[in-house]
Image (cartoon, rainbow, N blue to C red; front, side):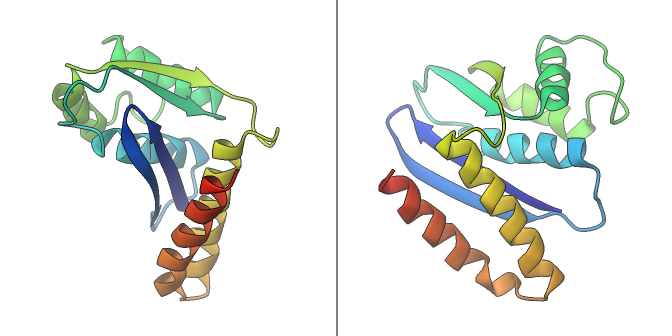
Length: 145
């Protein structure tokens, strides 16, 4: 499964990232993992303010909102242990999870979809070395949109 995430705002430079997640094809796990990697990248950023995580996965938004609030949840075996560890590291952040409609022209949502699909295809064809080129192209496109 290919993952993609974009960090924008909060006085941070634009960050565009992708990663291949082998041995899974469960969409909810992929959505949650992409969000986790994005959150990990802002841990320790001083005075960040509110972090708004936007995803086109209603399931991921629902699950992570409940985990963030400390509620007991079902799905993915509850709040994944790795996510629980991330929660401890990010408790000082004000995090909100919001659903956005997918494939609706939102440039950031379209960018992460492109990253996820491109990364998956690169690795399926054993072309993982092209991931950095994909990130560079998406970054340039976002800078000009």
